[in-house]
Image 1 (tube, one colour):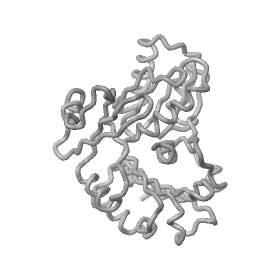
Image 2: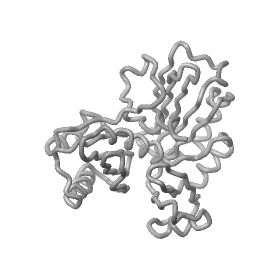
Image 3: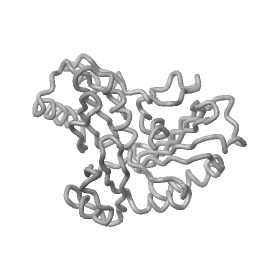
Length: 280
């Protein structure tokens, strides 16, 4: 199983009560980072991806958690990010927690063992309703009972809104996961468009992306920002660059910094994991 680890020499397992732990769990990856809350600095990152791009089984995920002695420490706070392609936004004035299943069913199909959860979003004033596999929900309650399960759009929207306030004109944000991507369009801190698209190849991504450009009349001189599973040497980047020149990567920002051991890391790939500490 591919494993990647970055550790600052100041990290001390015995000081875990001064650390904030953030985890991201999905069938396609397990990762976590540690924030030193005294210095407000990230000092550790561990990433464990499945072999041969296969989905992680519940048993394998539990094995990774139970065998990692660091995860058994007592932390000051634990944050939990649960990426999911199935989500929908509901304006707060229309939201009733008792009807979360009904809201979900209006746009999405619930699998047999799915659990429906929701989170409050400050900007825009809305709730995100999403589903996760039941076995994964069981693991989060068993090993991280103090953590509130958060959909990945919480930190994603928060970071994108922050970036758009200083951007002239529209800002287009593309966040890529293994088999789906989120597309957001913002204007001066206001969310104009949000949707999730399932894709099988780069052609699918380009089709949906430029379809939104056409329908919304977006000028290709506007900035487009990437995060998630994309790099400057990927085919997607190269293809988009043929049509849009102003391409940027969304870097995690907030009341924190990074140890020098992260200097060579593509921070945008872990945007949601690092940014969840900024979401209240």
